[in-house]
Amino acid sequence: MKAALPARASRGEGESFRGFCHAASLDLRLLFVTLFLLQFASVAQVSNIYSTGFEFSEGFDIQYTLMGQGGWTGTDPSGSGNGIVKDYFANSNSMHQPFGRQQAYVGFFPLTDTNGTLNVWRPLNFDPVAAALPIVTFYVTMSIYKSFAVTDRDCFRWSIYNTNNGGERLFTLDFDNTTTEINYELDDKQFVFTGALFENGGPAGDAYDLVVIMNFADNLWSAWLNDDQIVDSKEMTTRGLALNLGDIEAVWVNATLDEPGDNFMAFDNYLVTAEPYPFSLDPVGRLSNGTFLLRLTGEPGREYDIEVSEDLKDWFLLKPKTVDPDGTVLVDDPTASGYARSFYRARLVP
Image 1 (cartoon, rainbow, N blue to C red):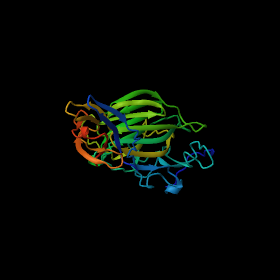
Image 2 (image 1 turned 135 degrees about the vertical axis):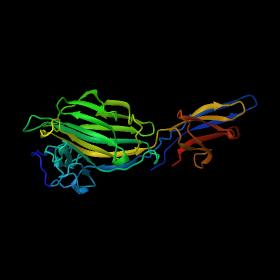
Image 3 (image 1 turned 90 degrees about the vertical axis):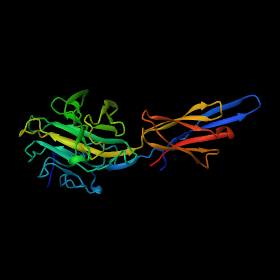
Image 4 (image 1 turned 30 degrees about the vertical axis):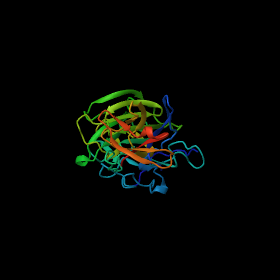
């Protein structure tokens, strides 16, 4: 299906671990214990779940709707109200970075679906907790444009769905193009004003970077628009729905049924990543019997291997530990007094 919007001028591995060192020297009078935090700048196991810039080189053609390209699908039976546009966002150089030439959009063309709502998505079908990557981050650059030929304005949303029962909605971030208010809706179906407003895209190609961080282990999510936090630690589900990731959907909702605006939301640099629950290994101290204590902080119920080394070259398993429900667990090394120094690290067990 051919789709075009009004013309726009072109403008031009490493493993995750945390650790530290214990060093001891002994004379006839006193045992000295010194703790050194290791400068292990741990490399996070960040996995790219899905990313696209909607470029022609990725298989996205401006002549066709977004639905049907690159694995994207949607709810409108005719594929109306979505597509690919060109040069709607500013590019910083001749290589068209950071946006490239093409963006996706929802809106503008009237829907054939009689409920006045369009959802467009690319299936992800990812179980963050089972994959031991419960921290999922969604990045997208977006801009919402006013209506051109009519006065009607609509709502544009990003909605997160799980995989159960064909997809259950967990929560929504709503951009109301009539009031320019940004709202959120949990699965209790109550809209809440975030206190933040947005500005419409204009001749300068104004765009926002939206970041949504979802903690599937702790059932929490937060959101930022550019550098401003607009949602802080809200529940992903209030009703005990399955905490997995089916997809992240771009949504267009007609404010007045059968009277849609020709406004639209353009978006680019769509990226979904996942990484392990943050964890740390910290010193507690030495007991009178020479046993050295450490505290592991991490994902409740998750198992970690605690490893020890004398030289940072050869590592040996001290013991596996499972984090308690409060997010911490003590680790003891009864052999510590037998070594001049010991280095420790914690490694996530897949």
